[in-house]
Image 1: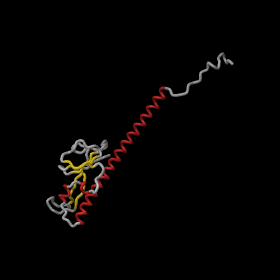
Image 2: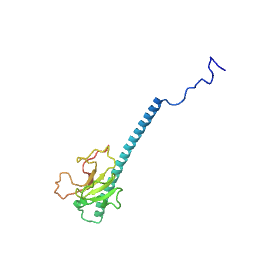
Image 3: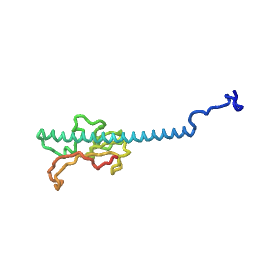
Image 4: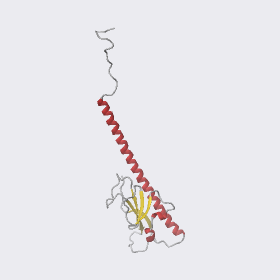
Length: 177
C-alpha cells in the first residue's frame, strides 16, 4: 500500500476555499458596488422629488388659471393685484400633498417635501427633502420660491393698468441637476 515510502493516510489534499486576500478583495468589491447602488438610488430619489415638485407647481399654475377663468365666467372685475396676494392653495379644491399652510414668518421646522405660503413676501415656497443637486438661492437657502407675476404688453410702464394676465413663476431661476 505504500508508494515511495509514503502511506495514503499522510497525503493531505489541498484545502478548497478563499484565501484571506481573496476574501478581502471580494468584500471590497461588494462594498464598492453597494456604495454605487446607494449613490444612484439617492440620485434617482432626488430626481423624483424634483419631478414631484414641478408637478405640484403646475397644479398651482392650473389653479391660478382656473381662478381667473372662474372670475371671468362670473363676469367679475379681475383685480390682478388681489389675486397676486392670495394664497395659491385657495385656488385649489384640494391642496397638494405636503402643503403646510400660510405663515407670516418663515418657519424653521418644516419637514422636507413641504409647501407653504409666505404671507410677508407673498410667495409660495417649497422646502426640498433632498437638495444635494439643487443650487442654493441667492439668500443661501435651498428653498424654491414662486410668486404671481402680472404680464403686461412689452413697452408698457408698470403704472399702466393694462394687464394681459398673471403667471406663477419662480422668484429666481433654480437649477436642480
